[in-house]
Image (tube, rainbow, N blue to C red; front, top):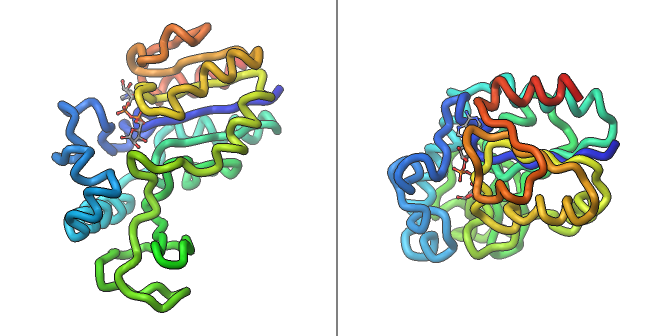
Length: 226
Ligand code: APR
């Protein structure tokens, strides 16, 4: 069986990371368009750096929850298992997931806008930092896919979706494309499609099955019974 799983902010909610759309449209007290667009970064790089520096530092205060561990277990149980996450935290890898795509980038990544090199960053990013690859200052940004930018590894993801037998969407509102459209692709390819979420997401009508509850309960149960 070939399985593709898509996760969103809901899987990390019980680890203490806030979701995007459950707080009056604010993400950690900021409007998305003030911190998660290339225009916001061009307008106010200090604010955007500060925002992601705080998110990155906060990773040390949070831990994977049973839903992250259940997916890492499932990867071991089923050998053809791809996990695609929209999350920029590192909780899936800390739980043990290995076949993992961070389609929206990673908090622990930085990208140089001059040479396009992507590398790790544990500490703070700022405007003045010099790229270790090209030696230029002022071009480093968080390795986050902002609104209006192309998510990572789309070719590979579409190929896997077109071949999968089971597509499971976990903890995502299904409101941001292209991820929101994955269920339709998997369905057209003949896969069983399942939504695991706290409440019906925007793509509810495209799923053959829906199970509602906390990710920490339902993810383990679903894969345990598979
Ligand atoms: N268990 C399961 N689901 C939960 C839980 C929980 N404990 N808590 C919240 N949820 C669900 C919510 O009901 C909601 O449907 O998780 C979903 C989170 O939705 P969003 O906040 O919209 O997050 P997500 O779908 O990941 O957002 C997609 O939008 O802002 C961009 O790039 C950002 O990757 C993000 C993308």
